[in-house]
Amino acid sequence: MIKHLGTYVCSLLAGVWLIFPIAHLSQKTLETRFSYANHDLMQTAIQLNRSEPVPVLMYHSISFEKSPLCVSPKQFEIQLRNLLKHGFTPITARDLFRAWDTGMKLPSRPVVLTFDDGYQDNYTHAFPILKKYKAKATLFVITGSIGKPRYLNWGQLEIMERSGLVDVESHTVTHPDVRHLTRKQFYYELAESKRVLETRLHKKVCMFAYPYGKYTKKWFPVLSAMGYQAAFTTKNRLTEYAQGRYSLKRLRVFPHDTFSHFPFEDRVDF
Image (cartoon, rainbow, N blue to C red):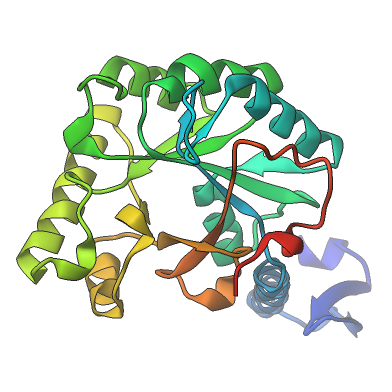
């Protein structure tokens, strides 16, 4: 079939279009050259994705309680509506890492909505709003709290996961400060939360959020060995690949926020 393709073919190699004769090239040689071109294109896309900081927003409870960790349902909808108005597209934390690792195309203005702990109001208040605007989000749940008062139950988690909008990930079993755990204890918190979520939700769990945002670098190899691709802290900054897979920052969301003004860079703590 190669000889019927014409006299010349264009191939993108190292970012430059080169025109070369194909009359005397074998199909294997052509396939190799196209493979190199595709590889170069993918690496370029990966580097481009990794070069741009992304706002990863940290929520906890979507409720009417008066607390720095609680955003009212009305205010959450205002925030989401303004994000969309300013051209942001909500993606999951998993989507972000797929783009960083494979070069998958990102929206022009991606934003990641994350919810820590797994409060029941994430289902009763946040989820209907997410569905209304077809917005994706990532839930980091404490598996030992599932089904307890004020926390999500398995039925709710299954509905949210099946929706295609919500990605449920690990926030440990008991919500400890991992800096003070033994290696055996930390392994249990990672392995058991991962096992339970994967068994009940029929999915792979690969994202993690540190309880209280506290961490120590000595646990990075354990996270990697357990199959976690990323771990998030509570350090208030835009998320960048250069921060390291297991020490990623997020931006806190406060009850009074509207997201009517940007850029997000104004919100960071140094």
